[in-house]
Image (cartoon, rainbow, N blue to C red; front, side, top):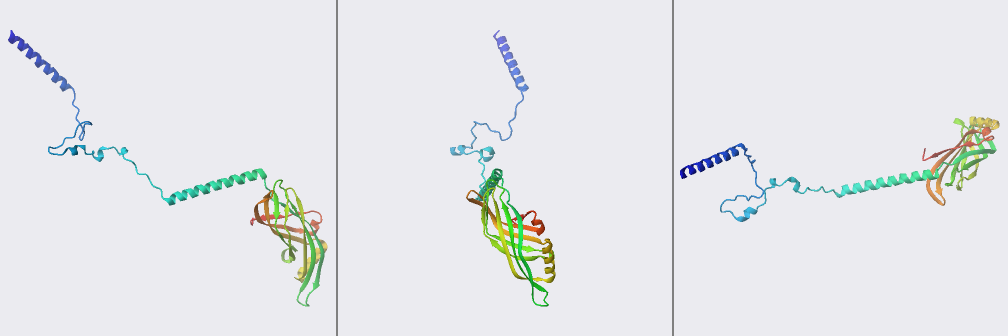
Length: 273
């Protein structure tokens, strides 16, 4: 009986072992990739090596690249200086544009209006020169009136000394009557100023064809008059002058007959425009 019991127990253990072996055969064995290491496993050291080698740092390739600090690019002083200069210039230009825009919107500046109101000739005589030279001497006196008007309601104009030159005739027959200087003046907002310009010329040589032409045009009042004035004009607010520029005022190309009935508007050239 005991032999039968032992035989049954041994048969049960063999059948249990066979079932366990079957289960293990059913589960696939995962193979470890080459170079795989357990996180908490101690590295195997050969016999006779010191214990300090076990605390050695892991190789560099085992640490991810993200853990290494990146080297920051250092800017040179010259590059930083250039950037600061460019930013400063850009800010200055922006402020200048804003200031000019606000100024034009608030004050609405306009150029002065200049007209040649009249031209009076008090003396216009020719005297004969040397015999046979074909030249005569011109003696003349005239007065030109320039009408200045400031159309601005909040801005004033400051005129420097005005250099005025006068000529008569046109084309090849144009003859200068001389030049003079007029004292500067200040024109308040909305103000109107009349400047009287006296002109005098004495014993100026003129050829005979020009003498004949000028005499005929003077009698018929078809003599063409030209007045040119050069000065500096300052634009001011209150008592302060903001800017001063040189201007050229050209009046004329008009006959005496036309000036007797109406004024002629002059053109203003600023900064050679």
